[in-house]
Length: 300
Image 1 (cartoon, rainbow, N blue to C red):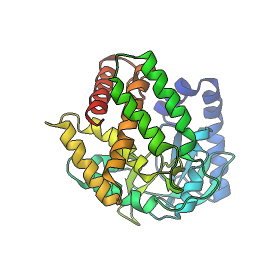
Image 2 (cartoon, rainbow, N blue to C red):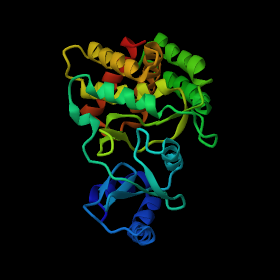
Image 3 (cartoon, one colour):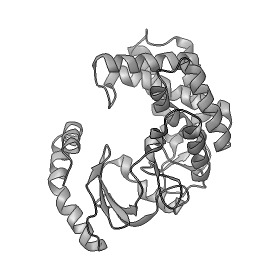
Image 4 (tube, rainbow, N blue to C red):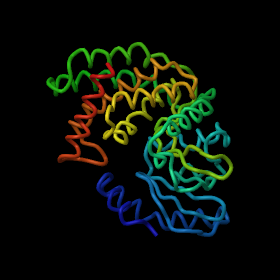
């Protein structure tokens, strides 16, 4: 039942705890199916941290127990199907949910044109609702962001010009420490926006943060940089996506740009220290780091 690639990546990332959870996973799914009156209806698929089991008119999602997955059902509850898939049942102890079923095709598959940014911006606007009080505040991460930036600048002094790092630190101070009490997706990229029946597109896999909606715009633009890497003028292509997203989301363009700049600087240091999920070493990692450097400088 469990895809081999998911088994391998989970053990590589989580070690013995991941192997133990994987051994229990078939029993967990069987228990949830019996409790929620479901029968399997298609092959099991997976994301980075969880499996999705298709059942009649719904899916059962079970994620590896991790703090980053705690508030996903809270976000779905708050949205109540407005711009995101509907939550039917939840088992917080098992990190499991019964969710509305959507198609496997993602917004990322649309390719060129303005539709990706326009759809994402429209969804972002709808998802930015007053947040429940129990959700984590993105502003609480500001101190750790500052520490990471300063440590990155010290450990990799030749990576980025000092002015670029200082501009990212200014984003932390000026935008990061005091943010609106609005619900954010928190991992808002095109692969987390799927085709659906009830609406053309719906969001999945939220983190459920509280903060500035423009932060999600920055999160969206990072993977778009990789998708547009072969453009004749990458900076111009990304600026176009930024303009379309900000207009559709009804957000200040400059605010989205500044959040994107911070996240690019963070990515430049993170890649040097840890690599990325799609590239831990080698030429691809070098290319992604060079791209982050280029954009961090040009968007400063």
